[in-house]
Image (cartoon, rainbow, N blue to C red; front, side, top):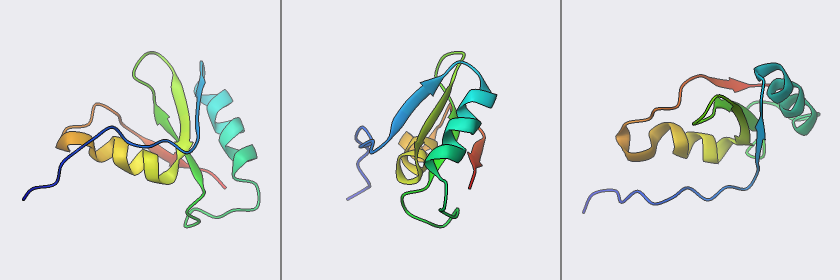
Length: 78
């Protein structure tokens, strides 16, 4: 039986108008963490003209969702 894709469960999700705002927020959330920490958050391009800070597992799900992701660029900040 193949892998069945469902909507990813989001632990942390916050939208920003600019990449700089998203990166600043991500750095704040990740203060004291490293990029291998499972609670680390990352910045991904949003579905509209925006940026989203999400937890690492959600980002992995989004980037692999259905095998064809429209989301690009994963930025981990710590």
